[in-house]
Image (cartoon, rainbow, N blue to C red; front, side, top):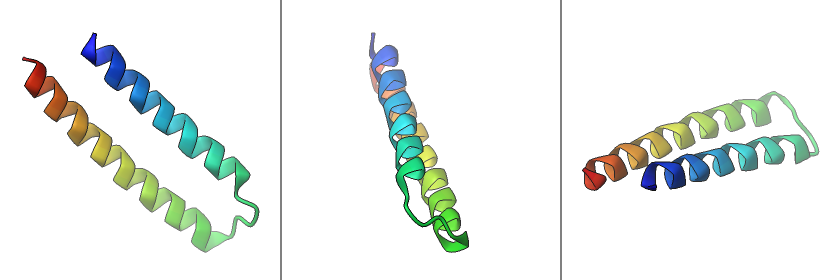
Amino acid sequence: MRAKFVRGMTAGAVLGVTAGMLLVPQMNRGTRKRLRRNGRNMIHTVEGMYDTIMDWAR
């Protein structure tokens, strides 16, 4: 049950980032670079949260 919740939260975050990228009005090189960096940071944060929650659930 908890794993489904975490997967849902992760999917929502990914969809939110994707929608945000599509709505950026001026997509220059600096913006793309910043979005990639923030996306990587978000992925690492979510992975850490997932690991913590799964350790807690055990």
